[in-house]
Length: 322
Ligand SMILES: Cc1cc2nc3c(=O)[nH]c(=O)nc-3n(C[C@H](O)[C@H](O)[C@H](O)COP(=O)(O)OP(=O)(O)OC[C@H]3O[C@@H](n4cnc5c(N)ncnc54)[C@H](O)[C@@H]3O)c2cc1C
Image 1 (tube, protein in one colour):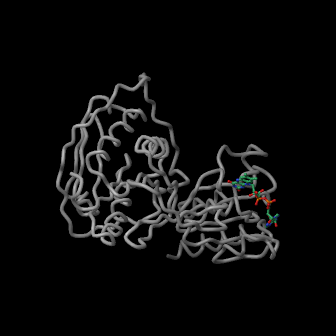
Image 2 (cartoon, protein in one colour; image 1 turned 60 degrees about the horizontal axis):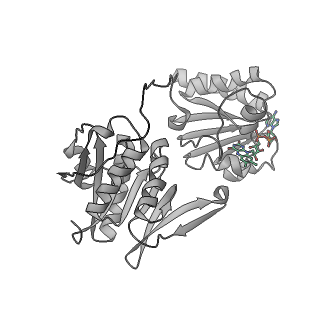
Image 3 (tube, protein in one colour; image 1 turned 120 degrees about the horizontal axis):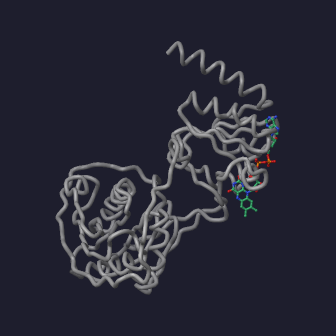
Protein backbone atom coordinates (compact mmCIF):
# COMPACT_ATOMS: atom_id res chain seq x y z
CA UNK A 1 0.00 0.00 0.00
CA UNK A 2 2.98 2.31 0.46
CA UNK A 3 3.74 4.69 -2.36
CA UNK A 4 0.09 5.45 -3.05
CA UNK A 5 -1.59 8.74 -2.04
CA UNK A 6 -0.28 10.38 1.12
CA UNK A 7 -2.65 9.34 3.88
CA UNK A 8 -3.77 11.02 7.06
CA UNK A 9 -5.22 8.37 9.34
CA UNK A 10 -7.80 9.24 11.96
CA UNK A 11 -8.74 7.09 14.93
CA UNK A 12 -11.03 7.53 17.88
CA UNK A 13 -13.29 5.10 19.67
CA UNK A 14 -15.76 7.98 20.02
CA UNK A 15 -17.70 8.40 16.73
CA UNK A 16 -18.20 12.16 17.11
CA UNK A 17 -14.50 12.71 17.80
CA UNK A 18 -13.66 10.55 14.80
CA UNK A 19 -15.91 12.69 12.59
CA UNK A 20 -14.20 15.85 13.89
CA UNK A 21 -10.76 14.37 13.18
CA UNK A 22 -11.83 13.28 9.70
CA UNK A 23 -13.24 16.72 8.87
CA UNK A 24 -9.88 18.27 9.76
CA UNK A 25 -7.90 15.46 8.11
CA UNK A 26 -9.74 15.99 4.82
CA UNK A 27 -8.83 19.68 4.81
CA UNK A 28 -5.23 18.94 5.67
CA UNK A 29 -5.01 16.13 3.12
CA UNK A 30 -6.11 18.61 0.45
CA UNK A 31 -3.01 20.69 1.21
CA UNK A 32 -0.61 17.75 0.71
CA UNK A 33 -2.46 16.21 -2.25
CA UNK A 34 -3.33 13.28 -0.03
CA UNK A 35 -6.39 11.61 1.40
CA UNK A 36 -8.00 11.15 4.79
CA UNK A 37 -8.80 7.69 6.09
CA UNK A 38 -10.51 6.32 9.19
CA UNK A 39 -9.46 3.32 11.26
CA UNK A 40 -12.08 1.16 12.95
CA UNK A 41 -10.96 -1.45 15.47
CA UNK A 42 -12.94 -4.03 17.38
CA UNK A 43 -13.93 -7.62 17.84
CA UNK A 44 -16.71 -6.97 15.34
CA UNK A 45 -16.95 -3.68 13.47
CA UNK A 46 -19.93 -2.03 11.84
CA UNK A 47 -18.77 0.64 9.43
CA UNK A 48 -21.17 3.34 8.31
CA UNK A 49 -19.30 4.07 5.09
CA UNK A 50 -21.77 6.70 3.94
CA UNK A 51 -21.33 8.78 7.08
CA UNK A 52 -17.56 8.27 7.31
CA UNK A 53 -17.28 9.26 3.64
CA UNK A 54 -19.34 12.38 4.18
CA UNK A 55 -17.07 13.46 7.03
CA UNK A 56 -13.96 13.04 4.92
CA UNK A 57 -12.74 9.43 4.80
CA UNK A 58 -11.74 8.15 1.37
CA UNK A 59 -10.88 4.79 2.90
CA UNK A 60 -11.94 3.04 6.07
CA UNK A 61 -9.37 0.55 7.36
CA UNK A 62 -11.07 -2.13 9.42
CA UNK A 63 -9.39 -4.53 11.83
CA UNK A 64 -11.58 -7.17 13.41
CA UNK A 65 -9.93 -9.37 15.97
CA UNK A 66 -11.13 -11.26 19.07
CA UNK A 67 -8.33 -9.62 21.11
CA UNK A 68 -10.00 -6.26 20.49
CA UNK A 69 -13.01 -7.15 22.61
CA UNK A 70 -13.15 -4.40 25.25
CA UNK A 71 -10.36 -1.84 25.40
CA UNK A 72 -6.94 -3.13 26.29
CA UNK A 73 -4.28 -0.63 25.36
CA UNK A 74 -1.65 -3.23 24.35
CA UNK A 75 -4.02 -4.91 21.91
CA UNK A 76 -5.21 -1.62 20.42
CA UNK A 77 -1.60 -0.44 20.08
CA UNK A 78 -0.80 -3.69 18.20
CA UNK A 79 -3.76 -3.16 15.89
CA UNK A 80 -3.00 0.48 15.10
CA UNK A 81 0.68 -0.33 14.65
CA UNK A 82 -0.27 -3.05 12.16
CA UNK A 83 -2.46 -0.61 10.22
CA UNK A 84 0.29 2.04 10.18
CA UNK A 85 2.85 -0.51 8.96
CA UNK A 86 0.64 -1.43 6.01
CA UNK A 87 -0.80 1.98 5.12
CA UNK A 88 2.38 4.06 5.73
CA UNK A 89 0.52 7.27 6.57
CA UNK A 90 2.06 10.72 6.88
CA UNK A 91 0.19 11.49 10.05
CA UNK A 92 -1.96 9.56 12.52
CA UNK A 93 -4.55 11.66 14.35
CA UNK A 94 -5.89 10.20 17.57
CA UNK A 95 -8.71 11.72 19.63
CA UNK A 96 -7.34 12.85 23.00
CA UNK A 97 -9.89 10.89 24.97
CA UNK A 98 -8.72 8.90 27.99
CA UNK A 99 -8.11 5.91 25.74
CA UNK A 100 -6.54 7.95 22.98
CA UNK A 101 -4.09 9.51 25.42
CA UNK A 102 -2.98 6.03 26.50
CA UNK A 103 -2.75 4.78 22.96
CA UNK A 104 -0.94 7.57 21.10
CA UNK A 105 2.42 7.63 22.94
CA UNK A 106 2.60 3.82 22.93
CA UNK A 107 1.92 3.77 19.20
CA UNK A 108 4.55 6.44 18.55
CA UNK A 109 7.08 4.48 20.58
CA UNK A 110 6.37 1.30 18.57
CA UNK A 111 6.70 3.26 15.32
CA UNK A 112 9.92 4.91 16.62
CA UNK A 113 8.45 8.30 15.86
CA UNK A 114 7.28 11.40 17.72
CA UNK A 115 3.96 12.07 19.38
CA UNK A 116 2.63 15.62 19.64
CA UNK A 117 -0.03 15.81 22.34
CA UNK A 118 -3.17 17.96 22.38
CA UNK A 119 -2.71 19.71 19.03
CA UNK A 120 -5.00 22.66 18.42
CA UNK A 121 -4.25 23.19 14.73
CA UNK A 122 -2.19 22.11 11.76
CA UNK A 123 -0.21 23.94 9.10
CA UNK A 124 1.59 22.81 5.99
CA UNK A 125 4.97 24.33 5.08
CA UNK A 126 7.06 22.98 2.18
CA UNK A 127 4.77 19.97 2.01
CA UNK A 128 5.46 19.11 5.68
CA UNK A 129 2.73 19.00 8.31
CA UNK A 130 3.34 21.09 11.40
CA UNK A 131 1.34 20.88 14.60
CA UNK A 132 0.25 23.76 16.75
CA UNK A 133 0.13 23.34 20.53
CA UNK A 134 -0.73 25.68 23.37
CA UNK A 135 2.02 25.70 25.97
CA UNK A 136 2.77 27.41 29.30
CA UNK A 137 -0.89 27.27 30.33
CA UNK A 138 -1.98 29.15 27.23
CA UNK A 139 0.59 31.95 27.32
CA UNK A 140 2.34 30.78 24.15
CA UNK A 141 1.49 28.72 21.09
CA UNK A 142 4.18 26.53 19.64
CA UNK A 143 4.54 25.05 16.16
CA UNK A 144 6.10 21.60 16.14
CA UNK A 145 7.25 19.11 13.53
CA UNK A 146 7.92 15.43 13.98
CA UNK A 147 11.16 14.21 12.46
CA UNK A 148 10.45 10.91 10.77
CA UNK A 149 7.20 9.36 9.67
CA UNK A 150 4.46 8.89 10.47
CA UNK A 151 3.85 11.67 12.94
CA UNK A 152 1.40 10.83 15.72
CA UNK A 153 -0.78 13.60 17.12
CA UNK A 154 -3.60 13.71 19.62
CA UNK A 155 -6.43 16.23 19.23
CA UNK A 156 -8.86 17.20 22.01
CA UNK A 157 -12.49 16.20 21.41
CA UNK A 158 -14.78 19.02 20.26
CA UNK A 159 -11.87 21.16 19.09
CA UNK A 160 -12.76 20.93 15.42
CA UNK A 161 -16.24 21.17 13.94
CA UNK A 162 -17.73 18.11 12.26
CA UNK A 163 -18.10 19.13 8.62
CA UNK A 164 -20.05 17.03 6.16
CA UNK A 165 -19.44 17.24 2.42
CA UNK A 166 -19.72 15.09 -0.71
CA UNK A 167 -17.59 12.01 -0.35
CA UNK A 168 -17.50 8.26 -0.55
CA UNK A 169 -15.54 5.84 1.59
CA UNK A 170 -14.20 2.49 0.54
CA UNK A 171 -13.84 -0.26 3.17
CA UNK A 172 -10.49 -2.05 3.37
CA UNK A 173 -10.18 -5.02 5.75
CA UNK A 174 -6.70 -5.54 7.15
CA UNK A 175 -5.18 -8.55 8.85
CA UNK A 176 -2.76 -7.52 11.55
CA UNK A 177 -1.09 -9.33 14.41
CA UNK A 178 -2.72 -8.60 17.76
CA UNK A 179 -1.17 -10.36 20.73
CA UNK A 180 -3.26 -11.46 23.70
CA UNK A 181 -3.08 -8.69 26.32
CA UNK A 182 -1.38 -9.56 29.60
CA UNK A 183 -4.40 -8.54 31.68
CA UNK A 184 -7.97 -9.80 31.46
CA UNK A 185 -11.00 -7.54 31.85
CA UNK A 186 -13.27 -9.19 34.38
CA UNK A 187 -16.08 -6.65 34.56
CA UNK A 188 -16.99 -3.29 33.06
CA UNK A 189 -19.37 -1.01 34.96
CA UNK A 190 -20.55 2.21 33.32
CA UNK A 191 -19.92 5.27 35.48
CA UNK A 192 -23.11 6.81 36.78
CA UNK A 193 -23.39 10.36 35.49
CA UNK A 194 -26.21 12.65 36.53
CA UNK A 195 -26.97 15.21 33.84
CA UNK A 196 -24.59 16.41 31.16
CA UNK A 197 -20.85 16.15 31.78
CA UNK A 198 -19.33 19.59 32.32
CA UNK A 199 -16.93 19.09 29.36
CA UNK A 200 -19.95 18.75 27.09
CA UNK A 201 -22.19 21.41 28.65
CA UNK A 202 -23.34 24.30 26.45
CA UNK A 203 -23.47 26.64 29.44
CA UNK A 204 -21.11 26.53 32.43
CA UNK A 205 -21.52 28.69 35.53
CA UNK A 206 -18.24 28.52 37.39
CA UNK A 207 -17.70 29.78 40.92
CA UNK A 208 -14.44 30.75 42.59
CA UNK A 209 -13.19 31.86 45.97
CA UNK A 210 -15.43 34.89 45.79
CA UNK A 211 -18.25 32.55 46.87
CA UNK A 212 -18.30 32.51 50.64
CA UNK A 213 -19.98 29.18 51.40
CA UNK A 214 -20.98 25.94 49.76
CA UNK A 215 -24.60 26.90 50.39
CA UNK A 216 -24.12 30.00 48.21
CA UNK A 217 -23.38 27.80 45.18
CA UNK A 218 -27.18 27.39 45.03
CA UNK A 219 -27.23 30.82 43.39
CA UNK A 220 -24.98 29.54 40.63
CA UNK A 221 -27.12 26.42 40.38
CA UNK A 222 -30.18 28.59 39.85
CA UNK A 223 -28.54 30.53 37.03
CA UNK A 224 -27.28 27.30 35.45
CA UNK A 225 -30.73 25.74 35.63
CA UNK A 226 -32.39 28.69 33.91
CA UNK A 227 -29.88 28.49 31.07
CA UNK A 228 -29.80 24.69 30.90
CA UNK A 229 -26.19 24.56 32.03
CA UNK A 230 -23.87 22.97 34.59
CA UNK A 231 -22.10 24.37 37.64
CA UNK A 232 -18.32 24.22 37.90
CA UNK A 233 -15.68 25.68 40.19
CA UNK A 234 -12.09 26.82 40.36
CA UNK A 235 -9.47 24.53 41.85
CA UNK A 236 -9.33 25.90 45.41
CA UNK A 237 -13.08 25.35 45.78
CA UNK A 238 -12.62 21.63 45.11
CA UNK A 239 -9.06 20.88 46.13
CA UNK A 240 -8.83 23.08 49.26
CA UNK A 241 -12.40 23.54 50.43
CA UNK A 242 -13.66 20.15 49.25
CA UNK A 243 -17.06 21.46 48.15
CA UNK A 244 -16.81 19.65 44.80
CA UNK A 245 -14.73 16.79 43.47
CA UNK A 246 -13.78 18.31 40.11
CA UNK A 247 -12.68 21.73 38.92
CA UNK A 248 -12.14 23.63 35.71
CA UNK A 249 -8.67 24.48 34.45
CA UNK A 250 -5.25 23.30 33.46
CA UNK A 251 -5.16 20.51 36.03
CA UNK A 252 -8.93 19.97 35.89
CA UNK A 253 -11.65 19.72 33.29
CA UNK A 254 -11.35 21.56 29.97
CA UNK A 255 -14.70 23.07 29.03
CA UNK A 256 -15.92 24.38 25.67
CA UNK A 257 -19.38 25.83 26.26
CA UNK A 258 -21.13 28.44 24.17
CA UNK A 259 -21.50 30.53 27.32
CA UNK A 260 -19.12 30.52 30.29
CA UNK A 261 -19.70 32.49 33.50
CA UNK A 262 -16.73 33.12 35.80
CA UNK A 263 -18.28 34.20 39.09
CA UNK A 264 -15.86 35.37 41.79
CA UNK A 265 -13.00 33.78 39.87
CA UNK A 266 -9.81 35.87 39.57
CA UNK A 267 -8.72 34.38 36.22
CA UNK A 268 -5.37 32.79 37.06
CA UNK A 269 -3.66 31.40 33.93
CA UNK A 270 -4.16 27.85 35.21
CA UNK A 271 -7.90 28.48 35.35
CA UNK A 272 -8.12 30.25 32.01
CA UNK A 273 -6.22 27.37 30.34
CA UNK A 274 -9.31 25.23 30.89
CA UNK A 275 -11.84 27.64 29.38
CA UNK A 276 -10.09 28.66 26.14
CA UNK A 277 -12.59 26.74 24.02
CA UNK A 278 -15.54 28.78 25.39
CA UNK A 279 -17.33 30.92 22.78
CA UNK A 280 -18.51 33.71 25.11
CA UNK A 281 -17.00 34.40 28.53
CA UNK A 282 -18.87 36.54 31.05
CA UNK A 283 -16.96 37.57 34.17
CA UNK A 284 -18.55 38.80 37.37
CA UNK A 285 -15.99 40.16 39.81
CA UNK A 286 -15.92 43.01 42.32
CA UNK A 287 -12.31 43.85 41.47
CA UNK A 288 -12.08 45.83 38.20
CA UNK A 289 -8.39 44.83 37.97
CA UNK A 290 -9.13 41.07 38.14
CA UNK A 291 -7.21 39.32 35.32
CA UNK A 292 -10.33 37.44 34.23
CA UNK A 293 -11.63 40.62 32.58
CA UNK A 294 -8.78 40.42 30.04
CA UNK A 295 -10.17 37.06 28.86
CA UNK A 296 -13.85 37.98 29.09
CA UNK A 297 -16.15 39.08 26.29
CA UNK A 298 -18.47 40.71 28.82
CA UNK A 299 -17.46 41.91 32.24
CA UNK A 300 -19.65 42.93 35.16
CA UNK A 301 -17.79 44.74 37.90
CA UNK A 302 -19.77 44.27 41.09
CA UNK A 303 -20.54 42.16 44.12
CA UNK A 304 -21.67 38.76 42.91
CA UNK A 305 -24.18 38.62 45.76
CA UNK A 306 -25.96 41.59 44.19
CA UNK A 307 -25.27 40.86 40.51
CA UNK A 308 -26.35 37.20 40.47
CA UNK A 309 -29.83 37.64 42.04
CA UNK A 310 -30.50 40.60 39.71
CA UNK A 311 -29.36 38.60 36.67
CA UNK A 312 -31.46 35.59 37.68
CA UNK A 313 -34.55 37.74 38.22
CA UNK A 314 -34.10 39.53 34.93
CA UNK A 315 -33.54 36.29 33.00
CA UNK A 316 -36.62 34.73 34.58
CA UNK A 317 -38.70 37.75 33.54
CA UNK A 318 -37.40 37.85 29.98
CA UNK A 319 -37.47 34.11 29.39
CA UNK A 320 -41.09 33.99 30.62
CA UNK A 321 -42.02 36.67 28.09
CA UNK A 322 -40.26 34.80 25.29
C1 LIG B 1 0.21 23.64 38.95
C2 LIG B 1 -1.06 24.39 39.23
C3 LIG B 1 -2.22 24.00 38.59
C4 LIG B 1 -3.41 24.68 38.82
N1 LIG B 1 -4.54 24.28 38.17
C5 LIG B 1 -5.67 24.99 38.34
C6 LIG B 1 -6.85 24.64 37.63
O1 LIG B 1 -6.89 23.67 36.86
N2 LIG B 1 -7.96 25.38 37.84
C7 LIG B 1 -8.00 26.46 38.69
O2 LIG B 1 -9.05 27.10 38.81
N3 LIG B 1 -6.89 26.80 39.37
C8 LIG B 1 -5.75 26.09 39.23
N4 LIG B 1 -4.65 26.46 39.94
C9 LIG B 1 -4.78 27.51 40.98
C10 LIG B 1 -4.70 28.92 40.39
O3 LIG B 1 -3.35 29.32 40.30
C11 LIG B 1 -5.46 29.92 41.27
O4 LIG B 1 -4.94 29.88 42.56
C12 LIG B 1 -6.96 29.65 41.32
O5 LIG B 1 -7.49 29.50 40.04
C13 LIG B 1 -7.65 30.82 42.02
O6 LIG B 1 -8.99 30.47 42.23
P1 LIG B 1 -10.10 31.59 42.35
O7 LIG B 1 -10.08 32.45 41.15
O8 LIG B 1 -11.35 30.89 42.73
O9 LIG B 1 -9.63 32.38 43.68
P2 LIG B 1 -8.96 33.80 43.84
O10 LIG B 1 -7.75 33.94 43.01
O11 LIG B 1 -8.81 34.01 45.30
O12 LIG B 1 -10.03 34.81 43.26
C14 LIG B 1 -11.25 35.09 43.86
C15 LIG B 1 -11.87 36.26 43.10
O13 LIG B 1 -13.16 36.50 43.60
C16 LIG B 1 -13.36 37.92 43.60
N5 LIG B 1 -14.40 38.20 44.60
C17 LIG B 1 -14.31 38.05 45.94
N6 LIG B 1 -15.49 38.36 46.52
C18 LIG B 1 -16.33 38.72 45.52
C19 LIG B 1 -17.68 39.14 45.46
N7 LIG B 1 -18.42 39.25 46.59
N8 LIG B 1 -18.20 39.45 44.27
C20 LIG B 1 -17.48 39.36 43.12
N9 LIG B 1 -16.19 38.94 43.10
C21 LIG B 1 -15.63 38.63 44.29
C22 LIG B 1 -12.01 38.52 43.91
O14 LIG B 1 -11.92 39.85 43.42
C23 LIG B 1 -11.08 37.56 43.19
O15 LIG B 1 -10.76 38.04 41.90
C24 LIG B 1 -3.44 25.77 39.72
C25 LIG B 1 -2.25 26.18 40.35
C26 LIG B 1 -1.08 25.49 40.12
C27 LIG B 1 0.16 25.95 40.81
